[in-house]
Length: 45
Image (cartoon, rainbow, N blue to C red; front, side, top):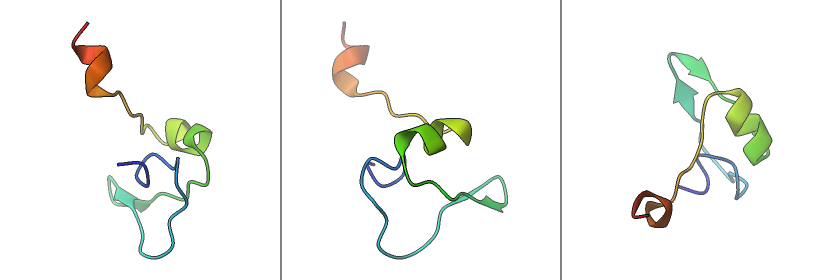
């Protein structure tokens, strides 16, 4: 999960969203591409 929303750098492979390759180097880049991570602990509140 951390690789998908760019909290950990991707070492290989690619991420495609809606037919377009997503280039993300930080969580902010992920947000700009519509990718966000919400932990389960937040959902339990």
